[in-house]
Image (tube, rainbow, N blue to C red; front, top):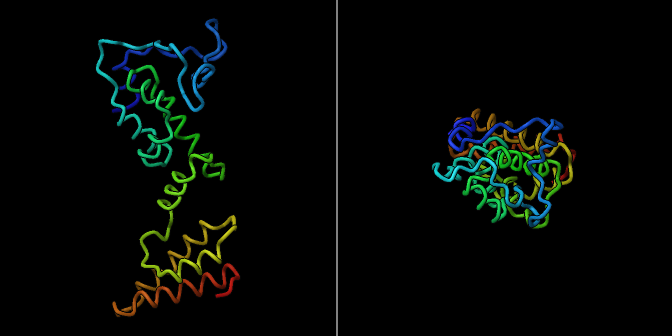
Length: 197
């Protein structure tokens, strides 16, 4: 379901632009709500009690895709109140999308809240360029020693993957393929990151 279709289904009037005669619109205020809540108390504006309930899973999936996160991750970052408001049609899908994008941007900058550590780590692993390579424990330890604390970590890991795949493709013997790829990628990383091991 598209955002436009979701809005039409809920029959939400357009939001007035900021600073107009009706006042400034602040959709993400949570003055009287628990921390982390996206809506505002008693905000039933646009709720149509006769309409179908919103597709909560679809709204969360769209927001997750927009932010480059997994839907389960976005769902877990929403408070219980936010989920209830979303199901009740009082929390607009745009607020969920804005929230997901905000969380993803904050995580990319390394600003992870204490209760988000496991979620952020799972997303980081998901975006790991080495995730599907047949690395040994020793490979992982060597790679981590070379890239730990570096701002170009992702670039190094991406090039490591490229080196691995190129060497694997060049090796004719399937039996020797992983070792040839491992040797080439590790040699490249050793010189590129100036690490020993």
